[in-house]
Length: 164
Image (cartoon, rainbow, N blue to C red; front, top):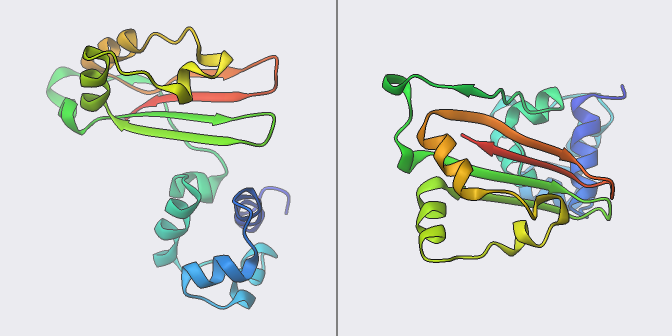
């Protein structure tokens, strides 16, 4: 199966540079269990999915479906999350094979911008050099959530900016 959960487990394991034995040890299962997952003979127990997704720094939805289902929307004022509990996420998959995931509370991002904080993970990426973080904060304060930026650069980098 080209886009199966087993394929996604194997791809994420290799992306992290792990052997099946190392993943098995972390997950508290046998290496045979990991092999069976990756070969679509069996699936991880449902209770292991959050730990597995967290270890790969992806959502359970992304692990199961192959892509995060983040939709952009404007939430009514009475239904919005408390700003201090909202997150700013940047995912960069570079053409060189580097993976950068930045997750910050929006309130921390706001304070950081107020004091002149620099984010080399963002400013150092050519695809994001013109990203206006203040505009993103303003959008979040006005109820925008979801994937707000998705870039496939000429260099082959894939970048996503998400508010949740």
